[in-house]
Image 1 (cartoon, one colour):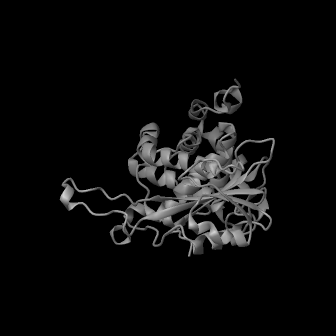
Image 2 (image 1 turned 90 degrees about the vertical axis):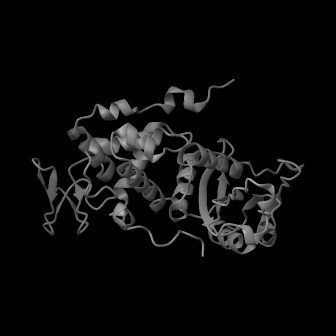
Image 3 (image 1 turned 180 degrees about the vertical axis):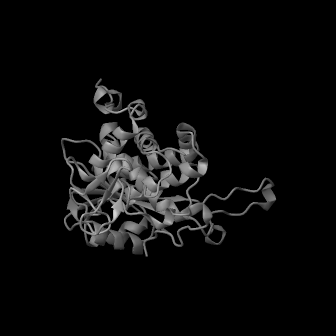
Length: 337
């Protein structure tokens, strides 16, 4: 029996201990390299000029030779105006990369020795960077689709005579949402999926499914779905294969929806075991985080660390997370209109 990838030495190319043993200067060099690459040339976040700008070693800042703007290694990024040390931010990303099923803000705050509020915003900044730079190019080949509902649970009354029929639409929660996933199957020599896209819907119906398939699936793609009538219109546009999950998990012709089910397996483990509750304002970010973890499940933790850090360095300062605890919160959900 072959060894699982996560048990191999190839999966462990970075440890949190390595990051915590860095000096602040080494952490500065790591973040600079992952943001701008090797060499002395850096990009001014104000005017965008790439050059060997004047560097002040006492303050670890550059002064742009073109516009005169003074900037640091985190200026213009999701970590702009940071109060924690750079080493702490890199340690947070390393912890985040090592957590296969996600990480709660409470656990992150304990590991970093910071307040819960600080860890909460930090984790969401990382999720925001993953969302901002996800690959939304069209899927092709074989694509598995499915949807799962969150925030829809209604606790039954203790007394039997007071219980309601929770299946009826009038008794459903108004904040109930559907996380919809589309996963492109990897090539023959690889296992699992090559790319995962997630969206948040108010309901898994024909209108939303047809809209997303038309926007993110190339013509000639084979679509695998379950027996839900939401996928019935796809037969007119794509080669669509179905499996009736009320009877079986694999159809007679070999059709399965396992890639989508695999995603929801990790998504539910993240929900029940780590986060416990998804707020609808940031549900799209949580869903995309699970998609990122699924797509990078066979990467080494060092590669995941570098990818996440680069995305954070390329993400502009988020207004949603500036003054969050002072009341500056996102006003609308990321819903498929």
